[in-house]
Image 1 (cartoon, one colour):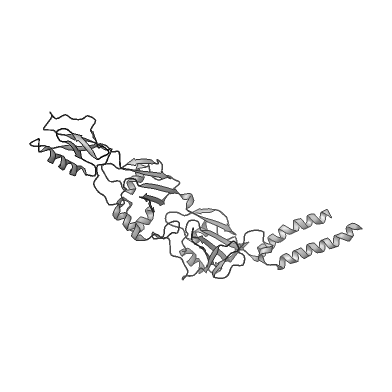
Image 2 (cartoon, rainbow, N blue to C red):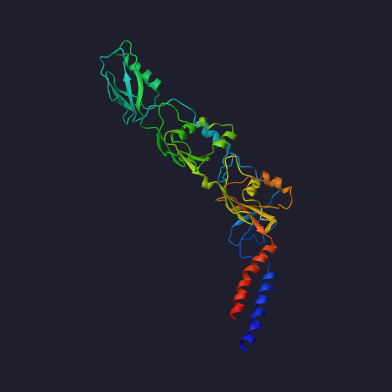
Length: 366
């Protein structure tokens, strides 16, 4: 009798819980991810304190495709800075430096002693040579030093014709690390070293490396470069020459991905290839929307801006075929999140699927 007395109120409470779940809106009947009550457009501050900017995807709100003026992390980089780097990296003759070792040969005067180990340039930038003593070498090109040496020797020799070569390079170095096959320190010798040559000296970019995501650091200033981006600007990487102390870091492709969540045919990270990736191509990579559960009117692209105070959310309604044209023009950026909401019926089905086993278990228990 006690069982029958308490069974009816218990079942009534369970029924009431189902009715409350049905009438209380999206947030109470979906245990998974959902868009919630987003405004149709405009700025708002979420419960977590972050500021978002909702933009319905249209031709007017379509963001510009990632170009070289915007680097891979979304931070503005003016083309003028790239031109500045290009101008400051022009090819030039090698300059002798402290620590270099040079050889000097006077063919017509074998009686003058020749150093088998060469002539090291000391920390003051000088070498010690017979007849003339100390002579400045650091900071001069080989032709300049040869001319200066010949001028000094003419005080003692009638027809001096010194032949000068660099035996060892000690001072001008650059560094490469990251996703290259042979990272390390490399020397800039008698010929200028371009960005292309530097990557080749390091064995080339590894299979996990992103050739469109390089960071060149020079005197504390960083330049985010991409081989394809430079090509699109009409600039060859062979025109960018390295300087002493430069460092190059090649980022991994792992940083160059788009993340897909929600009601898609498959859910997985998608790598952005060098030629770029559109929203339509993302849909193709994940086998499109799940026709059974996805709400095609609620597709969102979340684009964070790092240290900026806001995050953009682009809202696309893919119920119209014409919207696919916009999606095909929407170029993805690294770190973008693509999400599609489930339909209301799907949320309700999931709620029922979650509540009924518990209700059945309670019923059997009583």
